[in-house]
Image (cartoon, rainbow, N blue to C red):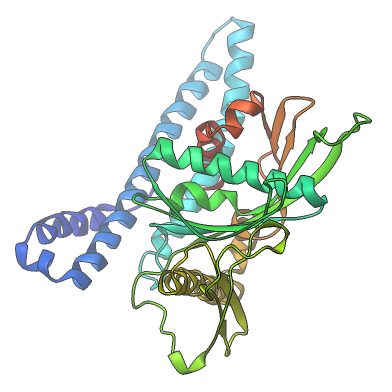
Length: 352
């Protein structure tokens, strides 16, 4: 045993008993607190079991090297594995130590739940807008495979069918644990259909993934909002709605501006805009907290949801590269069609 987790195991047993109590279940706020605590403990137990496995593997390789084994190839393999396992073990020990030290902190170790995703076309003009549409399609297909529900909160299309911007919600599952790795700048290298000379163009689109706040978590005072309504418009600027159903909300204390024009109903667009606003304010609050109290996690945070180049989609070479973990995948068309699991699973292993 690498850590004294026996007290944590005893606490876990008590939580299991408490969580089955009907009186506790009816007290939703308390039930939510102990459920989160239960998940934190389970993560520590899982990581500790993984550490035990690495130590057993390390011992096996050490035994091979200390024996009178004459198989040169087996000895070389044991030496190679021993170096890798030792490095992984040390990294995992630090991670478990951090989990145990931070278990009592108010901010949960694990964030979970529905998310709001914002995709914006970057450099590259119309090709960037078409790439933004491709990313939206990829996430839409991926959501279908996961059984998530997708709701479009706001969108702005171009005449060629691209997306200048789209904001949508994904829910009905632990969406954040999968989508949190997608935040950042995505770059595409390909020959656009409009390119007559056959030249490869490079375009970008940015993706922001925000955890959707639970009701009541973000307090917004109506008096601090400036609300404007206007007519929704489509590609080219033509009106698609004669009534003023589109809405723009400005949160005056933070100068955060959000819009929604997807629905034909003003009330629904207002609800969508408020959902976007709450997510943006929550992200801003968490960003400030991270900068003040989590400097040691700065690199991890920047790689997960800040506007840095995280991935390149190279169509001529049929290759997707994630720059955070220096990993390549082929079958680009299949991945862009929603088969994101190989990418996400690798990121979960390396970045968690």
